[in-house]
Length: 322
Image: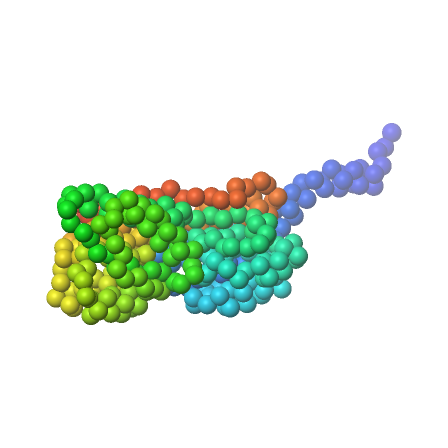
């Protein structure tokens, strides 16, 4: 009996359908991530941006990137643009903590999940964002305070006057690093913050404010606590121009752990830096995939970080990736 050639052709086509579908699925559009960065105010931020861009490329994720240039209104504009473009997920590192409810409600209404990176926000409804990945800024401040307590214990009779270079006014790291530091140093009443002002996380402003601290000196400055390395490096310039030795005449504590800080420690100009790891890109890309896929994720993901005193700077410097 002769087989029907038409029937045989149709059967072969039907059997081939699963094989045809596989490559079609593989060619599905890549996940689109809209990311709004604070700016490019420091070595830390530059490294953070580079990590995010490289990780997106490695993961095959389409990244739409916007630099807010330290302005909240620019970030709000960027987030609304991502909502209009119907991206799959939005991530941003907020310039300040407050003022996000309205735009995040718009993202939620559009069905677009939001991830916070590096910095937290204060909102009326925590469900407005899916997760926050970043450092524990309060603990960073505590680490800085603990280092100073140990140093102060070497000269138990001496009082130490501290000047503080805060980060951007209203930002999570500035608020939290101050809180953690003060929480720890209050254990020793001889440690007093005599002046505190924002250096906006930049070298130029850090130098400018430190110059003002030095000119207004009615009491000896023993310690500088800078909320990031860039401000500390700017302050080092001001201290040297005033004829003093940074790291000797004035002990300097800073936060971030960027290469410039290790170079300053190696040169004897900075005493300690508390690490704040900017290389969040790979973790962010995996988190974005999980959130879009509807997988359960931790509300708060903390990065592990260390404390690096000047004594280990020369050994650690070659290992720094940022």
